[in-house]
Length: 265
Image 1 (cartoon, one colour):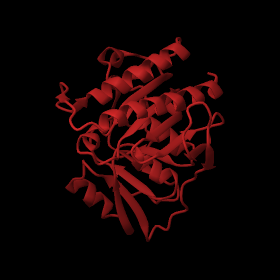
Image 2 (cartoon, one colour):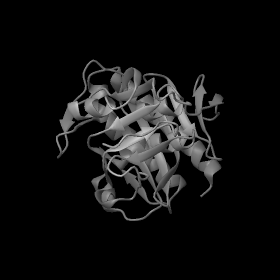
Image 3 (spheres, one colour):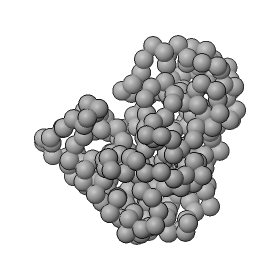
């Protein structure tokens, strides 16, 4: 894989998709449909998906592509593939909360190795460079030119005073009970893949997810966290969360800075 080309293309396509998403976000009214699992889908999901999937297929025709909005790709088999959620956090989008992201990732050998997470309404952009190091880009987000970037890395946490990030839309008692096992200084909430990115930048130490997610929800954020020195493990046995699973469904998981002393569920 040409990582230099991959990073350029993923970043550009995320920005183009973000422009289209924000165009629809700015409209007074947009249609919200329901998919077969009752999750919402909008014209923004579909338009962003077309931009990204067409771009990736043109640039990397020989690489398997899995994307949330194309059910035909969900039977793909392989341990190396590109995986896309063109609008992660559709509920955040529909409720105009801003915490939605464009997620594009490369999985190799079951591990997310490169990824981009772009939050267009928050003007935050995180991605892995060709060498695998994760950065946050600041500035104007020009399509053809990477702006100023800063390397990001996870915190060196104080296990008596952890900063925990949890879901805005999916908090439940089981999550709160698990968080209660830790010494917590404060908690914050965020939508979509921004939770992984907050751990990656050291703004949070721990993100437990005791709920349903799919690989396209997590791969890009997981790649960014990996590239910042973090880790994502299964909740049940604390082994690394792997990708390319049957039906692309994830078990419960914990994203964390390595210094966090993980508790059993």
